[in-house]
Image (cartoon, rainbow, N blue to C red):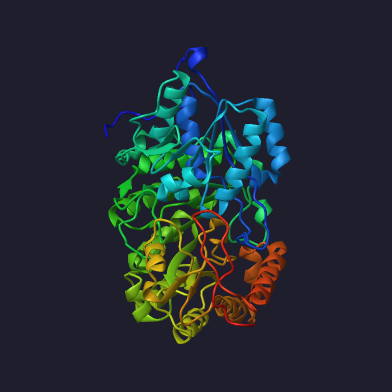
Length: 514
């Protein structure tokens, strides 16, 4: 693409005739915690993707409002009241796989109020399976896949002019009973052409900090310095693609200062998939943060890989204000790491955690229970490795076959010992779910290992208090209730079909008894 600005950089919108200016509502749907939902962690953060789309559409002259239902603790009726008051002509959701049914519930409620409203969904789920998403949910008119800023702007131009959306890149739409998926949109190469996320439209006072006992004392905002990830981990779907693009340090610092000085941010969360991917770039960003003395004003958090850090870089990150680094390690067995294409070694993981702690930065880690090709023995090795590695915090996820991942394809084919139990997307959670098991480890055993991992890691002297830094403890009973239900449901399961994508599944086959 060209270097032209996308929606403008400043807050002022160009003049737009009233007839072509639409009332736009962008939102995250209300979430219902129940027996088949992921358990939330402690932090509450603004959605950076919605922030970018909101900025582009506002700068194009549309009347934009943002509704963050989870942050404001709004139920469906609360959201409908906001809808009635604003009467939007266009609604845009962003959703992961385990949120997509909440999107459908909310969209159907909006349609009952105003059948003429146009409704779109974007985010990682729609990016992975746009056709399946529209086929599963008649409540939705459009699915935006890939980067959504330009696609959303072009779609609203078509809606305002009452033109067909045919030919808009990065869009799936309906043509009668048929779902049409247009060609993919080229990546945005010049990220500096994007306006800053429109977080002034968000309920910034409702966000809560990351990795802290006193989360309400912090006002965190999200930002990125790069988009894309060139690695090919088999469990991961990358909605921004394989190619890696960077923002200038000047653009990053400008947004950091905006967030602190205008929006009152006291904590920053970088959403880059690999913050330290390009050393020459990240060093320039870090030097800009050091010069601006950001460490004194807003500590920040990032995620990266254990093979993309070294002692000198970590010292510079500390000087620039880095408080926590989250590393994806995923397994404690080298053969499993090789098979899932993680591309790291256990030795590098040990070194990175030690260097991070030596630099005065808190190391956080992420592991997966039930990777492809796992056995009970390798899962125990992962738990042992996490305990012996002894980072400050650790998260353990049960492998889920998210759409668009190699794991999902493997599970469909029964490869790597994976057995797909459900095509109902409500069951696709990482902490709570029931979509997948292994030939050698039934689902109920995976969940036992999951509980064991958390118990062994956190129920230790000097480690227990870290639970309160990362977990919303009010949700722990939800997690335990799900495990109890799963164990009881596994008794006498008679098997059955998987169901269609997004829909209710039959009983899971072959689970071990509790």
